[in-house]
Length: 449
Image (cartoon, helix red, strand yellow):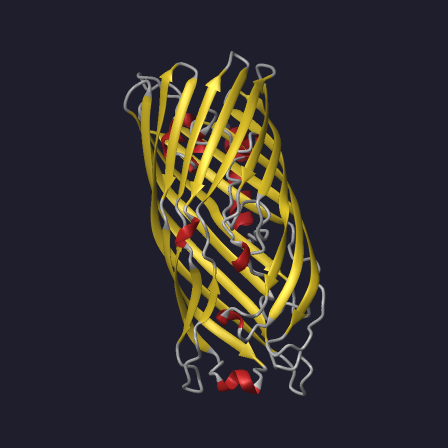
């Protein structure tokens, strides 16, 4: 027991340390900027069966009714009351950006390649559950449901469109699940979300960066705290066949912060570009997950998942400015998303190789919400294909370790901002090709005590 408690303490400490330095790869793992690596167990199946699985409580991210997967109490109160699951994903992305052409707002050619746009990153996850009795389980979890980060730098040809982008949502959830019968259980959670956004770009001098004063540079930072919810149900109509439905609510953010600039060119200064307070209201999407899991026999289990993300709630990013030090209010900064609702589909299999070793595999198709006409340097997104392998090994009667590998291939896409959109009046044009892939290594550990 002392050994287990020591391992638990180290696992929690590692997760908290990782979260404090979290960086999320730009659009490498999931479509849009959703993140779905919250369980090394689920990653091994490419999330197949994510809302229906009886494997462990990490699946409660997609369906809070599954929180009781860690509940081993019997009707007499015998068994382990507490369970913990900690997981982390190391994302190794590769994004090649080839600039075909670029120009400033008046047609002067722009040059410069983008190198090392995305860095390796780590995404942590932590789940804890406590069984009140054989039917009711309470829990708390930490996850990162949304993230986006990319840094082109100040010298690439499209720097007026984006030099750096970071979006991050950290979520703490309080959850409960309850067995209504041997076939049906329900669950729900209240979630506190902390959102952060950073947008940076160069400011045009309307001379291709060749004026005496040169270009300027600006950064916009904002954050907010919001509250959301989730609910779900899990149903086993016949032994060995499990159905699950989970829903996570939209998240309403009002980002507030500051815009800071340096070396603002005279033409931009005349438009009121100056250090100022900023705010933006935006609605992050809801996510609904429907899953099926079926035990073919004592060794083989098949899983299916269909996940709907309500990306259409994100129509645009519109940043409003207060009057700056010069008492002039600059026009809103706008980036049109016009995202479309999209689906994620996966199929996977689990094989119980031995009493202690479980093997998994899965395949998924993750559709991008980005429309071609509004693809931007901040969201150079394409459809994704996942191929996953994983496994679990029982270290002791009360603990298991989980490993997974996922290869993510993103369809090659073309960014073609012609400068004709009103929002690009001070950004100019850029045409570039993107070729992106990622290798994702996940490790998890769970135990009851």
